[in-house]
Image (cartoon, rainbow, N blue to C red; front, side):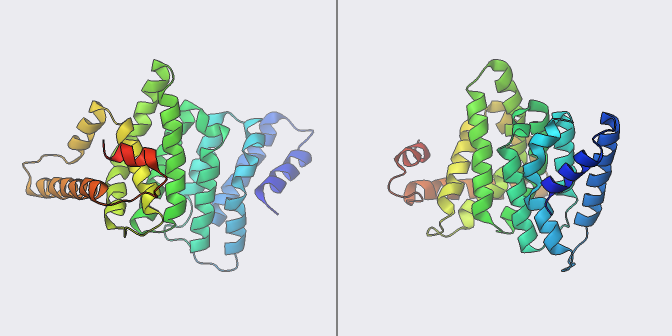
Length: 263
């Protein structure tokens, strides 16, 4: 039984109760889910964990009919964060599918819920990218997030202001990791092109304030440790951009991306 079926069962069982009673039962259900999802390396429970997380995106429309979008976002956030820190590979794949479903959902279109989820999703993407786990899926999710931000940035000034916060989260949390992945991956890797496309898209979204915040992230450059971190970061940036010019990281038909990386 997936999450959609369970929520439907609760809805039918509480059909004659008040809306508040239904919400109370719903929150109790998700609390039970999260306790079960937090259990690590239990091969008996693992298939249930995978099924729950994989099907989570199927209930968003139904949840949005009874809960504010910010509350649904909090449920998603708690569900993703309650998973074990070192989960089974299949559970990692299920988690990333859930994140991707959320990015493509109505929840992600709301400014407040999107900003809250951005920090969570970016943190989880960073972890798996550093470990080079499911890089293809990570690059697809990140690409969809960046595409959405580019679309929103082209709208009104108010919308543009909201996008600036999400860009800042990506810059401070994920930019170094993205550069590291691009630098370390072999030229022949099929995921290198999509990751480079993500890096170029993020750089095109960045403005002066984002560069300033990135600089501030390295702290006091007079400190030996901070100077070393900054030096290593800048060296990685130079290596990546050198490879942009020297190597063909995109397929021959990616003409636009080739032009953008050479700008």
